[in-house]
Image 1: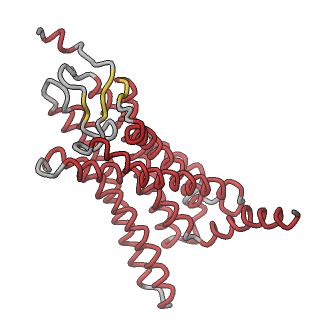
Image 2 (image 1 turned 60 degrees about the vertical axis):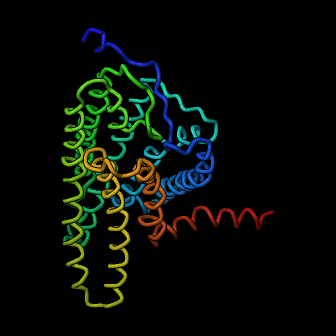
Image 3 (image 1 turned 90 degrees about the vertical axis):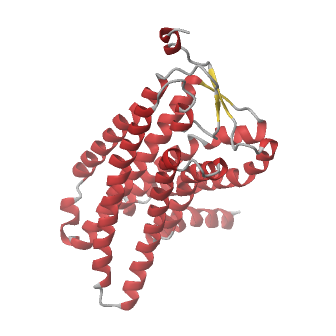
Length: 320
């Protein structure tokens, strides 16, 4: 077969086999995954609704909590409905175009989530180190410009990942050993050298997620230094508890992200079931944990929820 013909080969669809070796046993996975998905949907919609209706929550910190919830909804909805379809109905096919759209959405929402975490970390830094200048530093114009630059960075860098992968010749198998169209899982099906795709994926991982993680880590180190100088022991414990829970979620997101990126390059001996489990939980667990850690544990959001939702239910039940 000539090189010219190979370069034009593209299957009409790919087949997502889910967890290799599990077969019909994958149906049982639909139960915990569906529960986590619906919990993520309900919790994030609740956060968006509370922030929208409560005027006192229209400050930058809470607005970006709402943005984080929108991103989390996109992150899990990009993959979970298709995975549940694979597990429950055994419908494993995905169109060629749909596969690369899903690939883009996974990487784009992941990097945008990282960008939101960067802004939220900077927000907490300014609130602690420059509380008197908080409103003058974090103006709406500055935040919109800062966030727009980060999102533009994410869109351009992640947009090239599926663009390059979609131009590869797929002249062999169309069976993807994964639950969704992960970049390297798809690229490995190409019958050509994929070194450029692999290196570019690593470049995006380290230039976006790596630099963001470094910035967030250094910011939280400075925040913790300020917290440890608080005079009240109770205030220190409360602040450390809050920062500790934030850092746990942040570390989980970045560690699982880098594990997913690096396992294709250096983790050939890792069983595929373990790799795919981490790849799925990396997309599903943060949308569940973020509302719990960042929002529901926040007193102002709990009060707003009681004010706008629980009291309405109580009043309506009293009227009846």
